[in-house]
Amino acid sequence: MSAVVVEDARREFDGRVVLDGVDLTIAPGEFVALLGASGSGKSTLLRALAGLDRGATGDFGVPDKRAVVFQEHRLMPWSRVWRNVTLGLDGTGLRKRAIDALTEVGLEARADAWPRTLSGGESQRVALARALVRTPDLLLLDEPFGALDALTRLKAQGLVARLWAEHRPAVLLVTHDVEEALLLADRALLLRDGRIAEEFIVDVPRPRLIDHPRLLTLRREL
Ligand code: ADP
Ligand code: MG
Image (cartoon, rainbow, N blue to C red):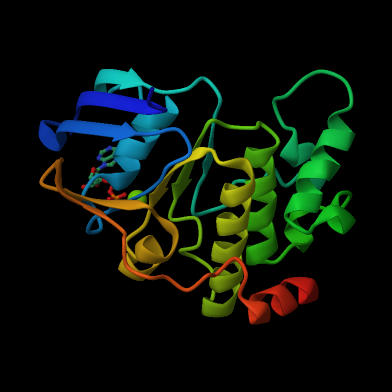
């Protein structure tokens, strides 16, 4: 059983080949980093996996329950934070579900705030809560920390590590930050010339970001 099986993913823009036959498998609960230079097609592949790109071809075996976090948070400015978290969902108890997810990212106190009153780091945590509330089997992260300052990025990386350890979705993290890939992922892939050109298992000792005492202190400060 795999969470993701992609075979021969292809995408061209105006005759220019961006994805040139990508094969990709992700096991349930596995954390995979996708590295590549700017413009190498990482976001294109992620959008295809998310089902957001009708122009991509190939076999996309992906779970129905998947959630995406982009570099920019994409919160709706006219909806309060908790409504952003449950946007597009229906059913009862949505506010409770939103607050549970916001609690997981340490933002339950901001449930009724407007998005514009949040910092960049807080906005990304709301975007994470919006993903979490969908209990995804596949979490797609497109450079989610790219716009954050260094300390906020460290905190957000720790949060993602903790949430992943607790919920164990399969994760595809797009990043051009090799250190981030080594820190968070089980396996790293390199996209080059439209294909997965290299792949390696991350088996070096890593700082235990999740348990780092300083990080725990910082999290209380958020
Ligand atoms: P990465 O995320 O690795 O930086 P992208 O997947 O965003 O790269 O883009 C890969 C290439 O495809 C780039 O050259 C980009 O300009 C091109 N591209 C992406 N989306 C479109 C689009 N909608 N229309 C035309 N070209 C696009
Ligand atoms: Mg990109």
